[in-house]
Image (cartoon, rainbow, N blue to C red; front, side, top):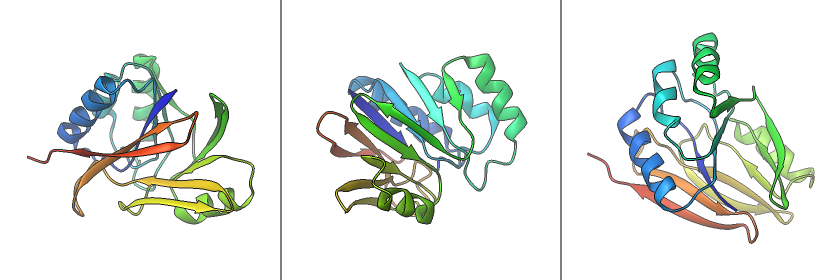
Length: 165
């Protein structure tokens, strides 16, 4: 299964919409969003993804009640709180917003893929055989607008660039 992994959109709905279109065109079946989505109006944008969307809170997601209400209305978006843990295909996945928590989760060896955001910087690192991934940022504040596509059968990761306008 191919999953899209995104983070840190910070209300850049134009870049998010482009990323969603790319992920849909590349056949992603699930989208994991690692926090700092920011405000409720963007739920209609991320809801255009062609499969299930799973989100965790970031440090800037202040309007949580509004986000939860919009997600409930949308029925495609599931906000799991601070942490997401589940099996996707044959791999165990952990996601939260913060790098230190993700590093600790990777060192636990309970997961195959550990995801975080927060730093806005692309990161793929292998820690004791566990893949640690930060998909970069959708916001584009620190450079490239990027997200990741992960093939769950092989843990092959593709860095995807979104054109900035």
